Image 1 (tube, rainbow, N blue to C red):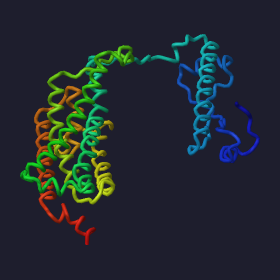
Image 2: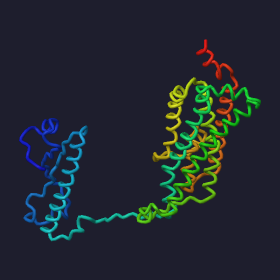
Image 3: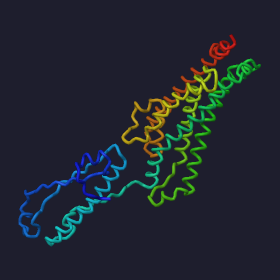
Length: 334
């Protein structure tokens, strides 16, 4: 609803009496070019431009919507005034619209689809890998300590190294399988045409098989990195809940680099390629878009493998320490 405001407009907006206010001023633009000055003055005796100030409360959603409504109404009014002035001067409508701009993308539909997938799919794959290794690592380390089965397992007539290796492989395998199944389900969804809007927008969601294989292989060292890191921390906790509290900050920190492909302007540089998690995320983005540089991709995968080896060494050291494995329980017994 539009109404005249009899009070001070700023006070009316701040008090919430109105959502937004349009304050009209008047400014006579008398400096005309020769062609405009030659027009008969009687056709428009007051060719002025009115300055309109829209007052609104940027901290209030209703006031923001009121600003938008007023701006739209004033835009329609401006078009009407312009049309009337052109008619009075006997000028066609296109006189005030000398250039009509249109755009057309030269990218192929599959390239546009790869660009879109490269923005959100890397984040999703990394998050699924994180979640796939998070809870198994807690259960196979702190969970077994809490249930009292870890000590029994390590005293079994099986080399402890094989038991620890089995835990690492189990956690990493769960993470890789979870991410792989999620990737497969999304690609099947795209291929079966369930996203009907893609055809209307001239977008084709498809990723070549060779790129999918590279993505899947890259997920393996990433899953080993996450799983080993989580296992090394979780085994130091005395209970499932304590391990969960300890790993949640690590999970949140690891999630931040995975969000980088969502932001425009972040380039896949050598420095970003060696950054943990960020290098893989940006490599996935470039790979899905079909623009991945081979050398930087190898750097990203290689650095992730190095981080995975370091995390694996940390986890192995944690499992090799009796103080870590049984220190908490001993303290409780004493």
